[in-house]
Amino acid sequence: LLQPIEQTRKSGCLYLQSPAAVQGKLYWKNGEIVAAETGPYHGTLAFYLMLDWSKGHFRFEEDIELPPEEMATNTISLLMNGFQRLDEYRWAKEILTEADDRFFFKLAFLDGSLTKEIMEKVLESRRQKPGPASLQEFLLQEFAPQYSQEGEMTLAQRLEQTEKLAALGRDLFSGEASPNKTRGPIKALGKTGKTISRHEDAILQRLLLSFSLVSIDQL
Image 1 (cartoon, helix red, strand yellow):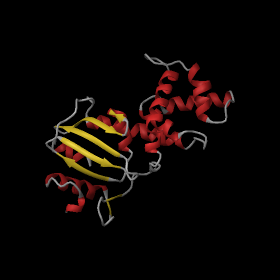
Image 2 (cartoon, rainbow, N blue to C red):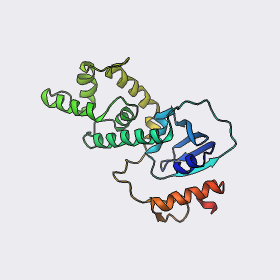
Image 3 (tube, helix red, strand yellow):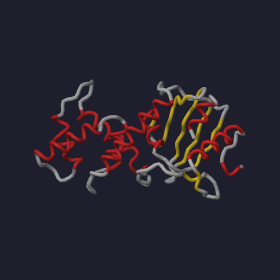
Image 4 (cartoon, rainbow, N blue to C red):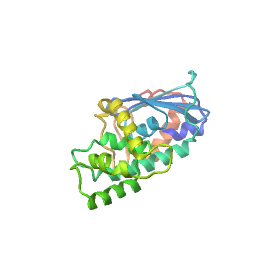
């Protein structure tokens, strides 16, 4: 969906809706994403959250007033970073317990507070020093306060900030479906619900943009 907009260097807003009816907006200027928002989140974090939506509805509008630019990274870099962070979150999701807040962990990976490397150190530390029952409690109470990290903020401070961010959108995003482990065929956004290949989908999205259609139902 993003590639045709980038290649045709369009400007405007791509309105998105997830399967759980969460709304999102991607603002484009000459084929580059310059701002993003979904729920209470903005910028790259909002983009990464929407990147996890494998199904939903969309429409693209041109000739709109664009908000101030808040994303300087090009679209390809955004996609590469986003997919890497989502993949690392999916890896971590497999080791979380029922007592762990999955949305908190998802945001922690997407905002860069946690990585697979850090989580592996958390698991190793937990094996050597048993603590609270949940992985989240061990991370926040035992591991983060002792973890040394370069940068202006410590891991404990970053995770405290992530907890505040999670509290803002937890209710809104609680209905989001679990991430798919594989990226197979996707469904066309329309009444037929026909399963199509990603190659066919790319052609279809290009047609939509070429004819300035707001949805597939207009074909």
